[in-house]
Length: 258
Figure 1 (cartoon, helix red, strand yellow):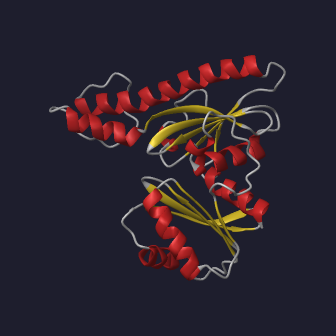
Figure 2: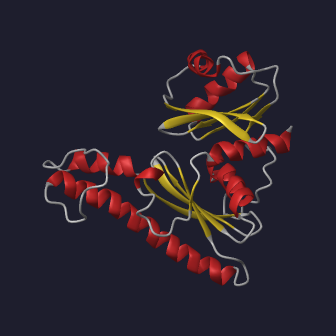
């Protein structure tokens, strides 16, 4: 079985694949202070009982990445391991000014989106995490670039910290767009506001894609990330919800390198 680990700024997502099937997944908080041994203790408790025969990892947290390297050398040295970094074969051309700036998660998301939804045309991946990332994929599976915006949770936290009469609220859909109290008004502005932001960006990106690829098929928009369920059904331009997109991409990268 293949263990996939996606280390993000806020959460770390683990998944176990049997062939192409994801049989189990977990989401835990990311703490860049964790040592290699602490990471192993946490992961071992989750994967106990599974026969791990391969490992694929990507990380956007440099401090965690250093400890993960140590953990791999100490506890996974005898199994085939793929760490997404420069030199690893992903099959994703990076058509940007500085490819070294692109996070590993965005690369594997591009690979997975093209494999799952790219047969009919270009794709846009909307990853709702610490930041909201819109990654644009060409009909050939190339990473074209995208847009980055502050994430939903950090925006709410920043607003509560900077506005004396506002506070952090539970992120649930309010009864109406017109909030009748402060809590509802914050919920409306956050959820409907971010949905509108995504719709606007997707619409503009789609217009550019139609000019670049006039003969390509319809643009597919895929939502992923831990906060995606907040806007699914509200954002009008999202076509698919694939919560395990990054894990699937890690599986595909591992298959290309072993």
